Length: 187
Image (cartoon, rainbow, N blue to C red):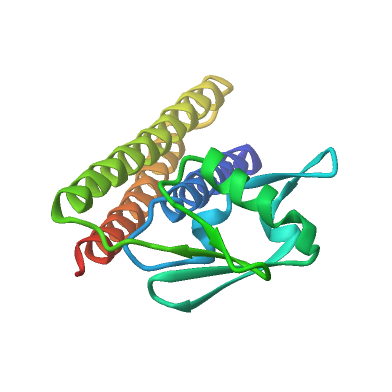
């Protein structure tokens, strides 16, 4: 029976970590004023009939904090890359010099920064809800195990462990929020 409880605890920890991993991916798409290749992670380009991630068909660099430079492996794809960036609705106006696509990342206004922090809060809350749902499912599973004859003390200890894991991941989520908020609000 202890194996079932340990499995339940490990599964809860794993699922909460997945929630944090998903949160970090979501937050990487919310720009913080500095140019980053991660901003273009969601861009897909029609590469001769097949939809291809931009990162697989070009070198993406940031020569400075306000510029993203995209050097395609195939120079014939420059206009398709520009079109894909516009269609991704990231708020960028790409231009090209015949060799590469250049995006100037405009500085964020105070109002836009506040809007971005609100977006971050929404993502943070989704992640916390996900962790609480994992806690609930784990506690339900422990109750089921308890009905199979495991002592109440062992189940209560396991529930306390689940709560400790939940608190640990909630703290991680709060730290991620504090870091991202500071990053966005920094002028």
